[in-house]
Amino acid sequence: ERAAEYLQRLLGRGGVQGRRGTTATAAHHLAWVYLSQGDLRLARSLCGRAISLYEEIGDERGLSDAYEQLGCIVLAVGQSEEAVQHLHRSLLMRRQLHNQQGEASSLRHLAIAYLTLGHLVAAFRHELQSLLIYHRLGVLSLQRMGTMLRELLTWAIGRRQWRK
Image (cartoon, rainbow, N blue to C red; front, side, top):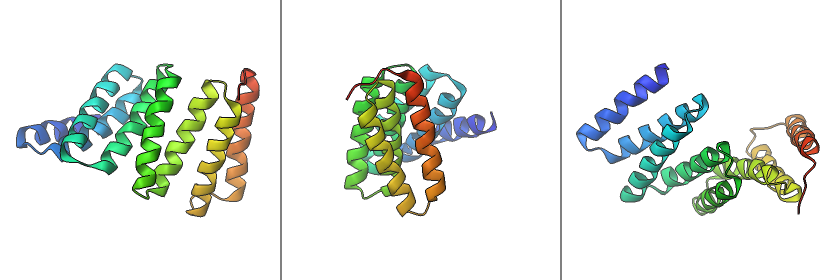
């Protein structure tokens, strides 16, 4: 609640001062707050606002983050195929920017989206790529990677609706 309050003030201040970068970033972060609270309508609206502003000012890094966020939002409302489109867009942008941590994050969310679609092979391929990048960056130990893969496999076995 405190984060939402602070970000709302920042969003308003950025708008009043005409600072599109500040407004975009505040909208983007506030969308994460609302997504975590389950207010998907407001999260999507703020994410859309951030995307528009990031496009206007040419902020490719912010735009790649916002497309990942949009993928997560539509995934939360059960639109997995649309989520895959946004997450792929984010992934491609992050690769062009050489943003490896962002690339790993997009790959991880893609794995989840593919899993919800029942595409087990694609899900595990993206998950493995994500985990390898995180490990190479020093973010994950081999033990934690194994745990994360087991968690994904356990979830996938519970679904039992697999496609290539």
